[in-house]
Each structure stands twice: as structure tokens, then as C-alpha cells.
Length: 230
Ligand code: FE
Image 1: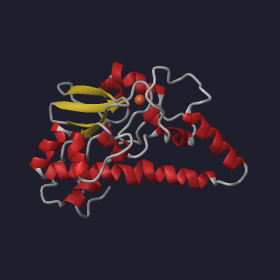
Image 2 (image 1 turned 120 degrees about the horizontal axis):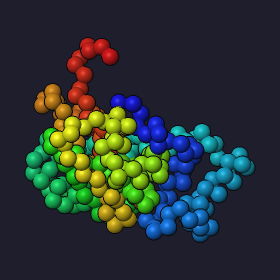
Image 3 (image 1 turned 180 degrees about the horizontal axis):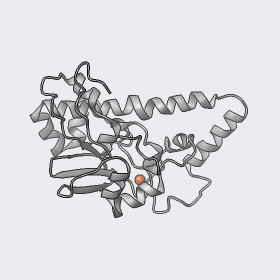
């Protein structure tokens, strides 16, 4: 699928730094507030860059690492374990926070984690309509498009349309469930295990799992056959 969020990715690249502070879920997220930690971090970042004390490219690389590598790999391990171990999957769906802690993942922005399972007849997608609440211990930092006004507002009103624009066309008979995250409760989507993965060990299964599939804006593609051409 195309990179998620073409329409949703209009923010400056360094907005991800601001998101790193993920301000507490507020009823007035768009009201500038000088005491807002995110704004203060943004000001500090600008000053450090201006004085040549911080290389913006290095910051971008760091954010990239946490957005795409470190965080999502934790969630992918949880998904792969659930695919392989029915008992773990049962615990995961019953009490996500506790089951995920079994694998060592917990902490800030992950105090209450709920896992929602995709099936052939039901698809789940997560959003934070008010700001950018996101399961940090499992997925790292939220991508810029997740925080965009377009994604936040339209995912609730027209989830099927948003998913289509993001490259995921669901059949009409698939029910779409939208989960609105907040500071007290965050979600992870358990994607459908693709066909052709029956013999794969956990690490190889985890390698197939993408961040976008765990947000619910993509599905997991089957592994490519050895020697297959792109
Ligand atoms: Fe939020």
C-alpha cells in the first residue's frame, strides 16, 4: 500500500518532536498555552538548533528510529506471540495491560492497554479524536498523520473512506469498529495472521507486522515466496 497518510501529512517534519511530549488529553487541545510542555519543548528545540547545539537531522533520525523501529517492534512481538500461543492471545484480549506486561512492555502512555482483534468480518482502527493518545510502549511515537486534524475528525465520521484513502479497501460486509483513545485507555489492533505463515517462527512472524496494521489502517501482507519478483 502507499505510505499511510498522504493527505494527512502536511505538518512540518519536526512536529514529531512536539508529539514526543504527548500532552495530557485535554478538552481544548488546539488552544495555545505557554505552559503546555509540548510548546515549551518546541521552543527549547528551536533554541538549541539555532545555537548550533543540536543537529536537526540527528533529531529527525532519532524520531524516525522510534516511530518506525523501536516502538513498533515491541507491538509486533506481542502480535506474533498472540498468533502462536492461543492461551496468551486469550489473556491479551481479556486484559491487554497484564498480558503485554508479561513480555516486559509497560510504562508511560501504556498504563491501560486494550487489544482489539481483527477477524474476516470485523476490522478495528484506532484514533485519538482530541489529541494524539497512542500506545507508546508498543508502537513508539505516533506518526504525524495520526495527529492530523483530518485523520482525527474523519476517522470517526467516515472510517471506511479514510481507510480507502490510506490504501485499505474493505469489503462492504466487513464491520468497522473505531476505538477512540484517551489518556486513560489506549488500543492496539491485533491484525489477521496472513495465509502462508503457518510454518514461520515467532521472529519471522513479528517481522511481517507493521505499525500501520497495529493502528488498523493496513492489513498484513502474506510473506513473499522465495525468489518472487516484485
Ligand atoms: Fe488524546
